[in-house]
Length: 177
Image 1 (cartoon, rainbow, N blue to C red):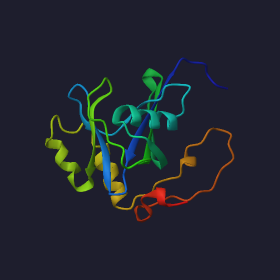
Image 2 (image 1 turned 60 degrees about the vertical axis):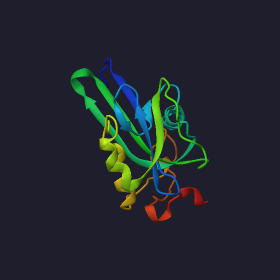
Image 3 (image 1 turned 120 degrees about the vertical axis):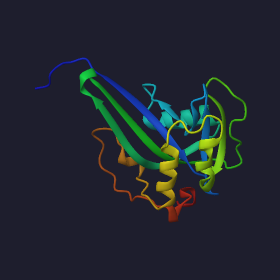
């Protein structure tokens, strides 16, 4: 039997976006928080996928198509009855000619496409990195890490769908049918 208790759940979607040139989308957060990757809170009733697409558009002015999941993370704080679930998505731009955000707004200062080899140098640009997620995930992808299908994170009760994972040799995934 379940014990009734008050608890909270925080959903977060992050997006690692790579274009066909092997460049990664990075954003400069407001308030000297530094460079990071697009992402943010899931605003119910939207899904994690909808939040990922929305946050990338708001923070980077880039329309993306989610191609897979890099990781599902959770952290439980039992003393606070709080659970945080964070999905890290792999995405590609819908239109590679779309220009990343150039003017600051309430979301971010700007966005840029950055060559993989140049990502570490952003530690010295402005306030540096907010977190190491983009450095870690870009390295993971460039070294051939698996990109799980979107069906890896499914609604409860749905029938399982068998899809294979993807790897760097297949990028960009937009070329696959």
